[in-house]
Length: 175
Image (tube, rainbow, N blue to C red; front, side):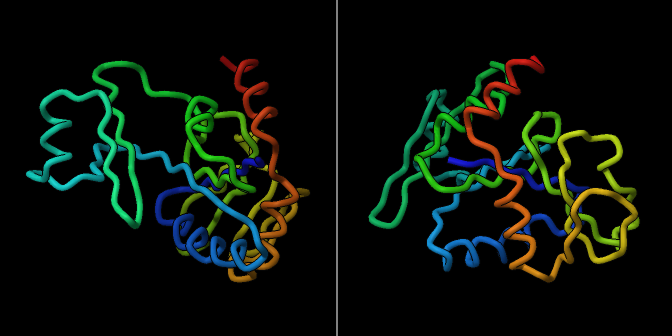
């Protein structure tokens, strides 16, 4: 299983790019999973529904299953936020895991940069960034591809991806 991250400021288009990359990878016969970090309070459950009520009542985990999907919600209940290696262990094996966020983790990342966002590039300050997907020319020795060239972005992600074991090893060094 390989892991690669997408990094960038809010509004850069990370999620939009990822929703274009997933079908591309799928057409190439790859199974892809995503781990997304949320910086704010979020909920995947609907207030008032049974699973929400179970979580609110204090359940540590609530698994919801149907004929179409299942989802596991785990409440931390004051425990520290898990690091990326711990979350990777919870996934079923796939060909590629794309991580959106977790910029403090030491996995390799492709920066998503959009000129209209008006934000500076992250790559000079993040040694984990190994390539840039952008809509504007960037002076760097890092490989760059245009945001709209999905084949080129996909190839860049696959070239830069590292194994789960490498992520775990690098994470232990940076603890």
